[in-house]
Length: 218
Image 1 (cartoon, one colour):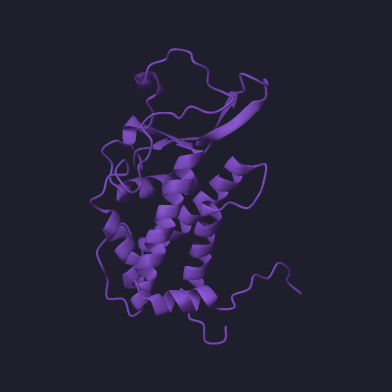
Image 2: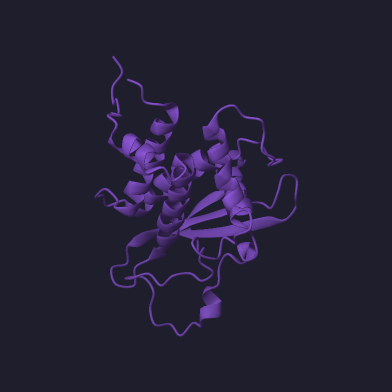
């Protein structure tokens, strides 16, 4: 890699995912694309931040990057997923071309009550497990019919999964487009900032390094 360290490549990958969430590549499949980018950020950063395993205790790691990755988990420990900067929605958004002035009150649109008092640390562990470990159909599309055109529009995704391993209680999460973009971008930014340690020279080196992507293997 011409002297480029592993953590520089790792930083560049997550930073590129964030860039595509912030300024999505042009596509007609914007919700599907956002879900793919959000899921990639979630799986990468959660797995990396949990370098200590589920116990969460910092180890005697030789690689400084492991300590900086673990900082991500510690930063999420005392913050609710519904608070800034995450702001997981507790009410379903009104969607252009779909929702009518039907007179429903805001409490009829309430969603994600299962996560109202959950920390970001516990939320991302639960969601990673739901996406990666779920048996059967734990993810469903949220689709609505346009009141104007009659076409079916993909609005987001519903995730239903056990509260924890072996638990009878099931939690239900509704993820809409804006939430996926915002939460994914914040998570990627937190990870990149932690990995670089706030060192602008690190970020400049990782951001300007010639890390090209091979689309073919000879």
